[in-house]
Amino acid sequence: MTDLAAPAPPIRLGVNVDHVATLRQARGTSYPDVAAAARLAMDSGAASITIHLREDRRHIQDHDVETLCAAPDMPINLEMALTDEMLEIACRLRPRDCCLVPESREELTTEGGLDIAGQQARVADGIQRLQAAGIAAALFIDPDVDQIHASAEAGAHHIELHTGAYADAADSTTRRAELARIVEAAELAESLGIEVHAGHGLHVDNVGEISAIAPIVELNIGHALIARAVFVGLGEAIVELSAAMAAGRRQIV
Ligand code: PXP
Image (cartoon, rainbow, N blue to C red):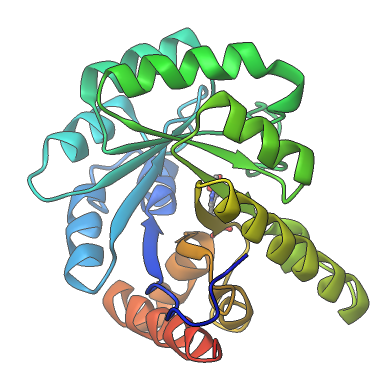
């Protein structure tokens, strides 16, 4: 449980730049420049940059991972499937963090959390390979008690809770229930000594409620930020979102 006497730690924003690459890949151009977007995001207040190297290479390419992992002062969170190919790439390029996610070719975006409980030995082996290369290994999971326990047993450095069911809830009753699941999962993970991140489907109007959950210390946000950047620019979109996160954090008493 959260220590009510202690102030909540600040909450950080990880900016997912996949859709900068989506735009580039749509026309096969060399622009917009993903590394420049990452640098602008960092200069605008991001704490880290997330990229997802998908098996089908639909947005981020191998050369993006190479460039970003080699960039000075660029904390990279590489999302990837748990495959030998991806483990080899991560261990060679050494991003700061690596988040294991489920992946299927047909999906529009990552649809659910990784099932840790159903493949614990395989996940633990992947985590060990990443940690041996000096990478903080994370697991993207649904806010589910069994998955939290399994993640702890598998040795994850941190978890990222999937907020998609909350963000996509069709009515307020469902949204309340999904928020309660996230709170319970975050508190359990914290009590087990696992750092808690969250993400998926977050935007300026719903990020405050998630930011008000004290054990969550980092949010990973992409689609809504890049969409907003079309109108106000990436830097301003990050400033707006950071302000909404800070306002939510102030709700913690
Ligand atoms: N976290 C993970 C593991 C993801 O796969 C994604 C989507 O790429 C996000 C966070 C960000 O979600 P969104 O693009 O909806 O902000």
